[in-house]
Length: 202
Length: 261
View 1 (cartoon, each protein chain N blue to C red):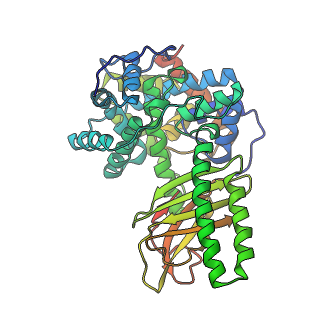
View 2 (view 1 turned 90 degrees about the horizontal axis):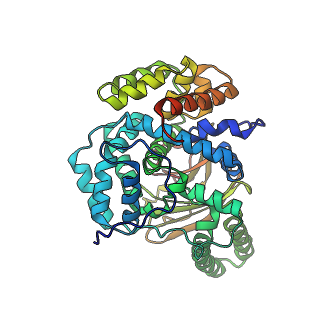
View 3 (view 1 turned 120 degrees about the vertical axis):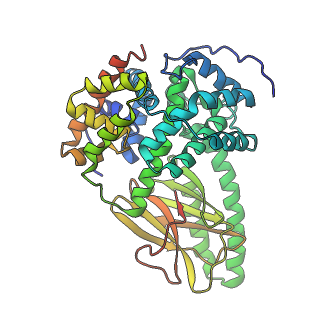
């Protein structure tokens, strides 16, 4: 496999929140090389992204064996579809994260549907507590925690239930006993506030 | 699922967190295609979600790396989107396609022509096989088969046709092409393991309100293709499942799902 330096991306995406030591541009560059079948680049990309892929998958899926299975699918999907990454549409970190989160969410939703399970109302508090606990050790976690803390309680619950627990906004509305329209706007406002607090993008 | 008549723009947050599904998601993506400011907003919100994800990072076991790197060696990569493998599209359509492709949900202009071409060819083969079989067995069945083949073709060529493919957990593969607009899907399967004579494969539509029987797969299907089977009455959010049931079928699944698409 060649190690030729990747072609410069004509448009560079917004700065992402990347693994330590691997700036956003570097990740995007790795992806363009991976798209050409560059195995060493794929290994480097794995090293830079696997922990967050597994992390978010585990946050949503919970079961650790299943999480590893889903994470493996995601990471392989990164290899398979690297050519579809477009830096104009977002950072490499956001793209990989999105593939991971989406697949995790698909997994839990398909299981929910398969079992036709009712949503348990008790999860509302648990979700935030568990995430808060998991978010304790690193600076990154501290930063996210601080920013989550700057949201209103309803914004925060809407965001964490949707993102970390993988519920749809309609399910979140049902869990919180709030109108669907309210949850939609809280999610958007909460995420905008989070974006500004984290200092990502623009 | 009750449709919302509000400004779809407000869904940007939910969409960026994958908290939309079914019709909501499709409608928002269509809106997104023509809304520059929404695209910019979703882009920014996605970056925020990436930070949320980074905060959950955990050290993966070493075995995961070995498994992934090994699997990659044996996995063919997707070609990039080019003007050659997509039909001419408007700028708006191209943007929509770009978003969907980026989002891992290829837009129809990108994958559909190739997929439909491939699938149509497969279905023609199937239809021929089926036509011959039914002709040999029962003259009268031919009209029915032809009608069904027309329906199959209509679903495959529906502008909103979505194709899903998956492995059946007990062996074999299944392909579903679904058109929500027509409320129909076409199901085919290949290489399903043979079942004892008292058992049969049953197809299900699994929606928010539970599972509905969608028909029995004809024959054991062992070693060959099953279908194409046309199922109508699809509603938003429906998924397709497969179980093994007693011959004659069950009103509710009585065994574990061996496929969910």
